Image (cartoon, rainbow, N blue to C red; front, side, top):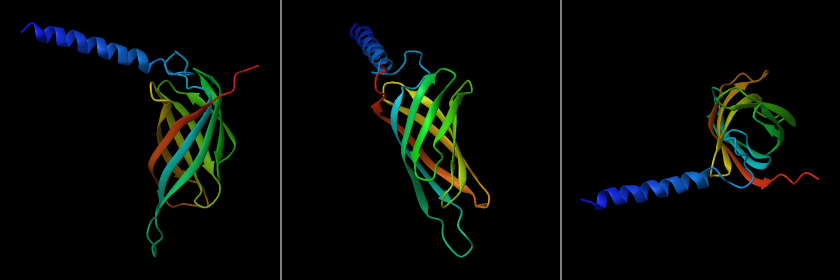
Length: 157
């Protein structure tokens, strides 16, 4: 019976060590909110509503997202994704950074991303929703979004 409290103490110490590791990923600000500056791999999987005589096909927007000038209020985002605009500002709304991108080739839509830090992993969680941009009126369904840091920003000189 005395082993059980000892096991719980060891487990609590291990969990505390894991929590400490999760909040000290290299290059991530310690505020728990601001993303690290640098280059992220970006993937948005989506499906556009089919025309009456065809079937819907899954598609993806792939490329990079470069985050700079990051602070608790927002950051500058530079898209390296075919068909997306180039530079956008992301703003903190109290629960997530909100970042938009407008796709201007093929299926045309505006995608709104809600990005949250994912401590200990080196990535951001990404929730996204898409709205068709005229002349395209077919519904766009977001199937998934990934934003993974692949390179830290160069040090300031």
